[in-house]
Length: 491
Image (cartoon, rainbow, N blue to C red; front, side):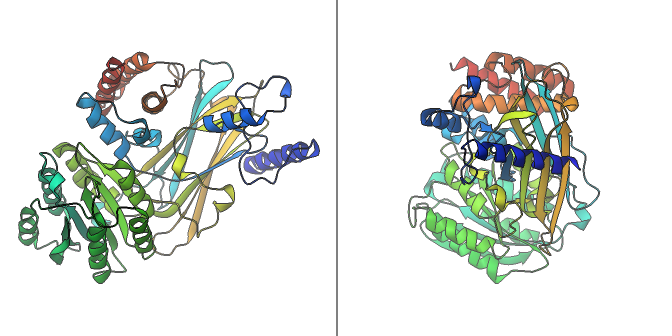
């Protein structure tokens, strides 16, 4: 019997035993167990609600965690800016998975156009607990082999974009992107404020002088009618649609819609409808005042990603260093599923991904939406788990499922983690990149809940980040250490 079959069989046996004792195995909502339940006492409704709020799930009744992949990083980018300016980001704007996925990973790339699955973990200072990491990686693209792109820039030129560091940064970012495009690429530009207007219809990237001139004509106007901007942008993208190309709308905005349809749902529905016609969306956020929630939901509904830029260096990273990653696709509707072995894992908690979790039965339903992943993308998920006494053997199996971006043919690959694979200590024996992920996730949790991960506070996290910056020689980790120090000083 293979490890995945064993885990599922054990889970089924546990479910049958639960049902035999009067429990229910038919609820569509996951059963939850409080962190402390001595003597196997039946939890009260209040305890159930408390455990559910904590996100910890009892694996004897619900041993499967399923979520859509997400490569957004805007939450970390925006929090970084707020902290650098001496402020504290709002807890609702903190998404731990976007903090973790903002950092480089060293996962092995696959030899084909699918994924590799990486699993590792480490024991935590608390007795019987551990952190498990699931890492997914796609193969980088050969720049010469990248499929041609039809790009429709939808640029916010409302009054709020006149603030220094907004529209001027957008123009700089667009100039950088145009300079990186190949001869098979095409670009159109739509500007919007109170109304939307087509600045430039779809033009080959070889006409760089014409494209740069159109970008330079972008100037600040009136209010922010995001609805009319996206409607016009998608209409232009549909008119010039090329089946063999990547067709993408790139929205550059502060996300502060104040005229037109500001209810969001109408905008989200239009974006989702266009995504179904293979016109995807990249949301590029700018500005000190930023509509984070709207931009994130637009990206999720538009089968795309949300990033945030606050400097020319950020723009270079998004549109130069990560051009192929942000424009091309390796996988559509990608989902991950982690099956925990209930004989070894008592309970688990997925850190982040709250708005990306999906029902276990939807994992292999290819009509259900997942995440769109580009070449060279890594996706990381961290789990806090409580191990059973004397736990040994297999702990969990992670599977990723996706569809080919052209044929829609499904693919899957899996990997398992054994208890013997756990490092004895998070901070002394696990890999540096694993530790960076733990620091990033713990920092996010500190900002939004003040709760600790891996038993360390903000000051200790900064110390770990400083040490890891030296061992990885990674400037981004050095910056993270400074941000943690800033946050700690705010109290």
